[in-house]
Length: 354
Image (cartoon, rainbow, N blue to C red; front, side, top):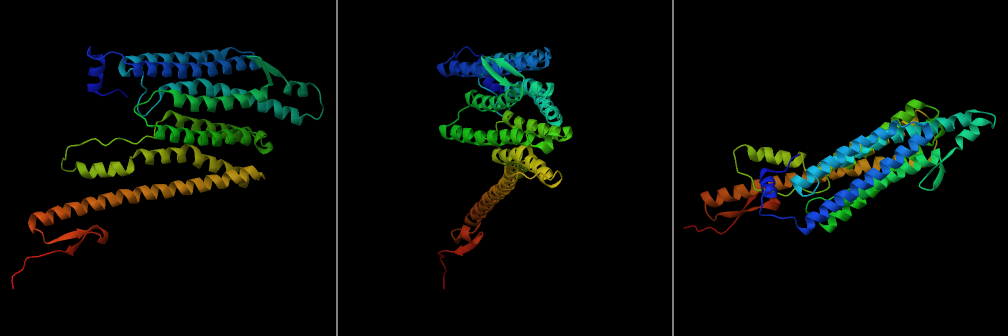
């Protein structure tokens, strides 16, 4: 997404110098990208220690895209991020998620092999192998869970630090609260779901859970929490109907609900129903979060219904205003339209001759 033509001409003009908030935006963007880089480096180091392989270091190539985009943002937008999409978070996820997949599958394989072995021989020692990064020594399974937790913290903090357009403090607080709730649900889904014995014994179920977990992370690349500002449009014939339909179906809040339901609550609910009904997993937390997903989906459907009714009420009031204008123009002060009576004509004062 490129900025508007007027914005480009203004930025490249000589009449505007770098201001203080422009330098702040550049500094915030740099700090966020350094945070992404640090986590990718830690994941690559853990990968190389566990598998004795250096392939994960090639994921650092994607970080070059992040910094190239950062230079482009400095030139075009004075360090401010794109309006609806965050390319830096997308490249960060593409660099770190494959590494976390391999580490999680590796730790689950070691754990299952240790459980299937009746003796306490070499396999029990392998399952307790540790690695040390930044002075912290933990087992491979603990490192896998810790890196997933750090991932969500980095996403939330990165979304908070990355410079955006004019955002009020109320919108920022709302954004952080929503993202913390989303991150907690995603973390519970991946950590608790993959620790179930019924899941660990079947690699296909593990892949499904990891795929759903990965899809839920990509909602952090979208900026759908802020509402669009209304811009004056020309009153072209046929455009008003299209604008009304687009405003009802393509509103920012509607898209936010659709994305959250399709990438998180819906898939999470399907996986949990499958584990309870097909795999016959009896887990109290699993049942609790399944009921929570059902309740959240019902509330989101209700919210969509409220938004639809609000839009229809606005269209109805617009039609009433048009009728009122026609009556005043054609008949005079014959009466007034009662909006509470669905646009019916309420009698007024008339000058009649007897």
